Every structure is written in C-alpha cells, then in structure tokens.
Length: 166
Image (cartoon, rainbow, N blue to C red; front, side, top):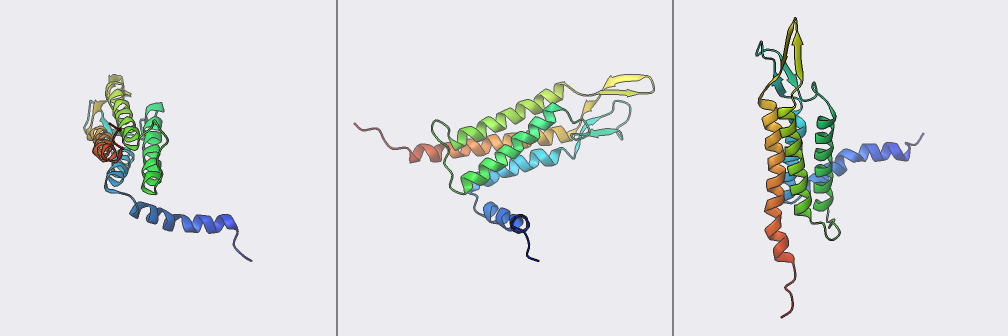
C-alpha cells in the first residue's frame, strides 16, 4: 500500500526545516536564536519560593496568558525569520527589521510584566509571592537578542533604498 500524501509531507518536514535554517542570513539566525532562547527559558526556574531556595516554579509551571503570548511572539519571530531567509520581503510599509524590533520589544514587555505580576505562594499558612529567579532573566535576554537582530538589519535596508532624484 502506498503512503498517503500527508505522510510524505510529514516525513519531508525535518529535511525542509534544516534546509530553511541553513538558508537564514546572519541577522535572521540571531533572531531565531533569540526566539529559541525565550522558549527554552520557559523550562528554567522563573520563580523561587520565599521559604526555600529548593522550591521553584518554571515558566511553564506559572503558565498564564502572558506566557502564552510570549510563546506566540517567539513562534511568529521564528516564522518571520524563516520566511525572510527564504527571500520573502514584507509589503510596504512593513520592514523586516521593524517587525523584529517590535516582536522583541513586545516580548521584553511581557517578561517585565511577569517580573512584577508574580504568582502567589501559599504553603501551610504562609501567604506570600514568589521571588524572581534566573530563568526570567534568560527570557529577557532572548527578547533583547531579537531586538538587537532587528537593529542590526536597519543599516542594510537603508543602504538598499533608492536615492531620491535631485
């Protein structure tokens, strides 16, 4: 029995993804790295209990709409990097660098929001909020990497613009 068309597409997906990643330019790779850092930071401890340094909560453990938005921004950044690395040019007035900077700033704002809006810690009569741990700073660094990738693209796009006639 022959394999279905969807099975062939699924088996081809990893090879296509590797080809797309190899086709990325330097700045798109940096943006992809920043997005991967944001998602990977969700596995690290974002919060530490005030009573013990052994009790921690990861980004996924404190999952709310903010973490969902953060993953969505990372996915959109990855998609944009792969598309632009393949030759896609966003329609005017959008610019590739502007989209990356916007995504990175938005991700950073979400992370800063979660630094102030920490989950509550409740255990045996103790009612307090979690303390910030290193994982949330890794997420912030990933967002800053995305912003930096976008800012590195801007001079290149300015050089490609045609000069106005005299």
